[in-house]
Image 1 (cartoon, one colour):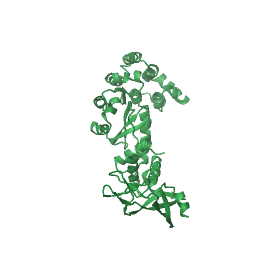
Image 2 (tube, one colour; image 1 turned 45 degrees about the vertical axis):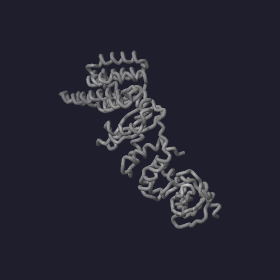
Image 3 (cartoon, one colour; image 1 turned 90 degrees about the horizontal axis):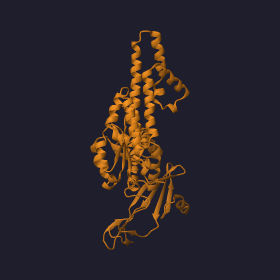
Image 4 (cartoon, rainbow, N blue to C red; image 1 turned 90 degrees about the vertical axis):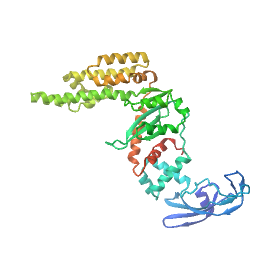
Length: 403
């Protein structure tokens, strides 16, 4: 029976010497097949047993029952150093109440679950789950920045309506989150960048950022060889926001119309027109196309601004040459200076970073997609009581070397 349990347990280098089947769990006693250990100080082998130290640790369940193994972490005495040392075991770390393979299983579950339910499922506590996450991240972390050349920087709010922000750093070539920072000040971001060596920072050639201005000076200082590219989707957003503001103004102006019947007719036309105006024209449904036509027929300013918005999109879609794209954007800005006054000011301030897109074609589209995934993890991640564990919870999705 013990031979069968040894095969069933499947821990390399050990054999089962006894077991007990309790009502709630199975207790299995194991011993090591090796008779020697390597001294961590001098590297010499020793066969001299100094002491036996028995411990209990949770392992993978068998047939739905929890399994605890009783193992002996022997203490050897080194002939060379004349000092005792504890043997290193391949299946469990020092001072751990769980095996490595159980910790790997739990971390895999955390990728798609939350800490509270993962703890319940494994009949343990949130503290133990957090301990497993921290242990496995140190043991099997695989964050490789050697080929990082294109970086995306963006931010998400941890809590809607609050000022608790997380800045995400993304490898745009691999579509992987490579860093998370609690807060968006230069001080906290610099602490994360300090972990990267100067060689990594100097090899970055492109950085995609939004138009807030918070990151521009930071990138210029820490990544001297990088070209800053304003993300085209953030650029398009300021155009869309001003178009939507114009729609809201038109709606408010309807109150000035004294003819109640005419006022209600125009109000019905504007009702539900937001997405018809703001969505890309080729992505409109038939109903939205019909609504857009109604709005453009009755509101000349919105019709003009909508066409200018479409022309603006066309500039970024159609030009992959910096000279052609830059001059096309200048012409557009001259034409739209009366309709998109606020946007023109932003475009002027960020002209160099915006037009860099025509040469690099770099965007933060991947960053936005990954940020959505981070938001999902945030919702699933209740039970983490500090940002460090939340950060690990996010990064394991991309950088933990577990099959």
